[in-house]
Image (tube, rainbow, N blue to C red; front, side, top):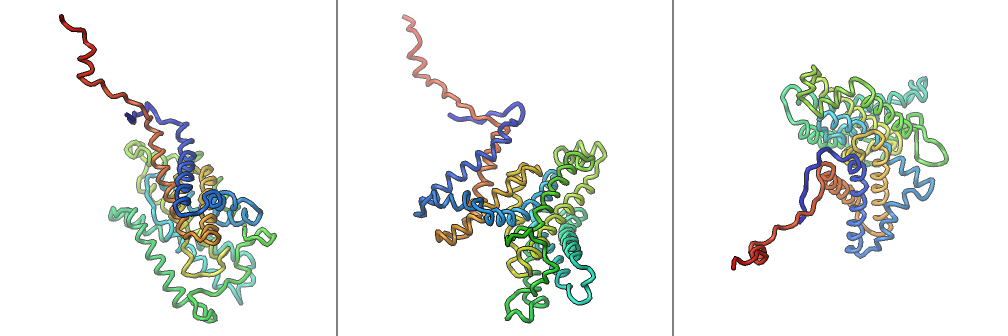
Length: 370
C-alpha cells in the first residue's frame, strides 16, 4: 500500500525535477490522446516539439509568442510571491493594448517631429493602461476587502466588452469595409523588427531586460525582500513593520503595468491594429508559465518557450492534422494539472506500507500450548 509521508524539509531536487516530470506525463497523456483520436502520435508530437524550433522562421514565431508570456508572467510572479492573487492579467493586457492603440491612432500630420519616439509613448501608454485596470482591483481590495481573485477575473470580461464596443463603434475604420477593426497603424508607430523578413521585433529584448530587472528586484533589493516575506509569512512581515497595504498596491501595479506593456507590444507589433481578437489568452497562459517557471524570472523564460511551443503546435495540428485549435488549451491544462500533482512530492515522499498480518495467520504461527 502506498502512503504519502511528510518530508522533514522541502526537497530541492524535487522542486527542480517536478516540472520535468510534469512535462513527461503531459507528453505521455498527449500521446494517448492523439492515438484515441486516430492520429499518428509521433507526427502530432512533432508539431508541438520539433516544428516550432526547426527553422529560423519558426524560431522567430516562437519569440513572438514567448515575448508577451514572459512579460506578463514576470508581473504575476511578483504578485504570487507577495500572496496577492491577480487572475485578471488578460484584462490588463487588453486595456494596455487599448491605451497603446489609442496613442498609435493619433500619429499623423502634426506628429512627424516625434519620429520613432512615438513607439516609446505607445509602450508607456500601455503600461499606464494596465496599471489603471489593476488599480481598480487594488482599490476594491484595499478599501472594501473585496477578493482580488474575483474582481480581477470579472474585469477581464469588462475589458473585452470595452474593446468590442470601441472597434465596433467609435474606433472602427471608416475605410475598413465595415469590419470591426481600427485603422491600420502607420509604419512609424510599429515596433521595429529585427529584419530578415521575420516578425521578431525588439520586444524580445524588452522582455529579456525585464527578466534581468525583475531578478534584481526580487532577490537583490530590500523592497523585493519585503514583498516575499509578506507573502511567505504575513505575521512576521507585520511584526517587522512591513506594510501589507503597500505590498498589495506595489504587486498589483507592477503586474498590471507588465501586462499592459505586453498588450501595447502586441498591437503595435504583430497585429498593427485593434481588432476583437486582441485577447489571445496570454494573460491566463502566463499564470501557468509563472508556476512552471517556479516564480523565478529565469525559469519563466524557459517555461514561456514551452508554452509558446504549445501555441504554435496547436495551430499546426489544426492546419495539418485537422485537430481543433482548443488542443492548445488541453495541453496547457494538462501541464498545470500534472505540475500541481508532482509538486506534492516536494513536501511528501511516497512510502510503501506493508499491510499488517491477519490475526488468523498470526495464530497459525504461534506454538501450541500442549
